[in-house]
Length: 334
Image (cartoon, rainbow, N blue to C red; front, side, top):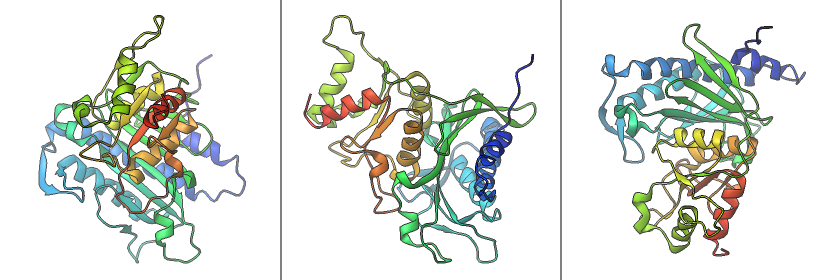
């Protein structure tokens, strides 16, 4: 008997049928994300042929040089959702303020946070890059969203996920009922279910960190990394170091194989480099749904209440036992 092929649209619809009260609005958002991912994937795969590599000459709100694909991906997300009627607002890593739905467009009751193209510094080297997204429900009762709606802790997410553009394009998402992965079949232009109910190992054998920042780390972090490379137990093998420098790619590998990713605070950047709303919170939601954990070194990422749109946070994310052990080193317990 041939294995049944399930598209992401079918999977979303099947999930919606479990909730008789569902209006279809939430499913519409996920389908719009799927469309945006297909469009971005197409451009990423032919970027070198259509002169979309390189820099735009501008800088984003973080002072980083904006690459042409960054700009393109940002516009794809905004244009896809402006006419959808499902959102009341968007917030993006590439935009210094909230992105409002034009008054002449229909609006909904959800808020989309997104990093349109993570790992853009690797684009010109043809390294895997990705998009990250989180979906919040509007909490306020008024027609216009408030600060309360935008700055919600991650535990309030309705869904989150990411797209990785690599040797194949894969979309991974969760609505709070497990994590599912879909691989784009370019021959039919559909995302097909390829990884049902992803469970990350409780403990891994991979660590991912930029050791170029070693001299700026505190002693507790240095001791933790040393414990991975030089375990004291004779029967314990050292961890393997794997670091691509593209958050989505490093996270995706560790999610499947087990391990830990760290972008800690250091002497030069006490709050780390990664953005709470656009990177840490959505990926923390996904990893917890897969059985893993995410922390800033002291507390759960999903419990942190954002205080600004572009707040940065140290990130320790991956297999549960590895994250909990790392926290003990950060707190000086080990």
